[in-house]
Figure (cartoon, rainbow, N blue to C red):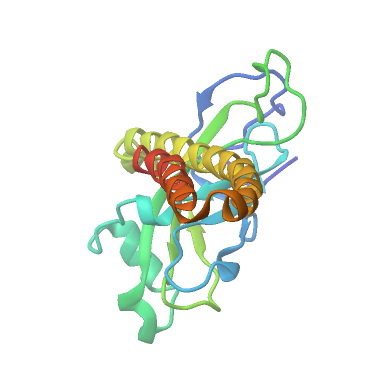
Length: 215
């Protein structure tokens, strides 16, 4: 029997279904991350692990800069401090993020182009923003606290996903635009002179800056 999760969610989820799962405990070492690759005071980092429902490997973005940290007086945050060296305790950041299953396995009735089984759960994350050689630590969010976190965590996850998608779209359009612009620039510099180049730069600015202002 799988003892990684408390309570045990069985049998392994097969059908796609959007649902929130309360997780009260999990085995140490169940989650990994790329925090050490993100440098000092990261905007975010990826958390990797097992979905509690379908038991498939998944990954999620912890958008640390977008999430309000726990109050330092909160019981769980106080507990987390004891896991760190005293010299770093005041630098500790504790926050709650939502993880959504994004496994690559096929789940029956999943919408087109959808990853995962539809399960999401909360995870308390503690890390040291100014220390690059210390891995985050993870704890479950007790049921008597989780109701406070679901709505803001969901809203932040949706907003960040939208922003990243928009940024990726702009990057893709920018690459295509730049390729064409450089080709035009080569001709303009020979044929049109300075005035033509100025008009091209104005066009470049409007294509690049306007979409960024809308993010």
